[in-house]
Amino acid sequence: MTRNESAVSTRRKFLTGVGAAGAAALAGCQSTGDDGGSDDGLSGTIDIAGSSTVFPLATAMSEEFLAEHGGVDFNMQSTGSGGGFANHFCPGNTDFNNASRPIREQEEQQCADNDVEPVELTVATDALTVIVNNDLGIDSITVDELATIWSAEEQPEQWSDVNSDWPDEPLELYGPSDASGTYDYFIESVLHSGDEEVGHRQDYSGTEQDRTIIQGVEGSQYAMGYMGYAYYSTNKDRVKALAIDDGDGEPVEPSLETARSGEYTPLARPLFTYPAKSSLSEEHIAEFARFWLENSTSEEIVAEDVGYVPLSEEDQQEQLDKLESAIEDAQN
Picture (cartoon, rainbow, N blue to C red):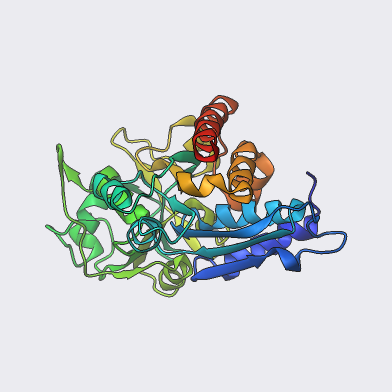
């Protein structure tokens, strides 16, 4: 479907101003008129929780869906991947959980204990982005330096403790809370010593509101934070992204292109949504899951509007086949 420029502008303002500030309710009954949803008989409520990183993509897809199916209501919460699984999805209170890392074994067990069967669907690729203040005279960082800064074991207090060429000034750190899949992925991809993971330091400002990370880093010359690429991409004038050197001496800047090509290592990562198989027995929920995957290759929605890498057609078909099998099981 074709969308006008004002819709794109409105969504970008939403991502910039709201970020992952909490919850969004999108009511189909509000989508009327020439630009609103059609009354095609499809109706019901869809409850979604989980990742703040996937939140803007889920919001974009729900807005697109409402333009075609005006009788559907959405209740969305940005709770963090782990918070969504533990407090909403696995107890059976939501239809989808968005996640910026795969579901864990203990979460699968919690779901099973409540007769919830998650269906893992990959929906995009993200370039996890490390940001600093615009006035900090640092443009790149090695993975080892990044690990040192955020390590619970080392916990350097000043920039110069990590690299003698850096300022003799205190580190001020902002990042996602431990309920976030971004937090989990950062530990898995950066905080390790050989094959062993190292703990994430806790003396930092942790939040599930990405706009708070942006505000904190913007407001302090010696601050650092990390988040999903989509939130950075709508705030490029406010903070600076560091290029990442994965050990070869050639720092790579985060971008859709470097995430797509595989150059941006180790911080390019898949993003997921998990519908509950039982929820897929309801036609409006099954249709939304199909709609999301059918639009997962869209450069306009996924890349231009939100700021993630769309699926390839091959990956899209693999996810659609998995979804259709789950829908068939649920509805028969």
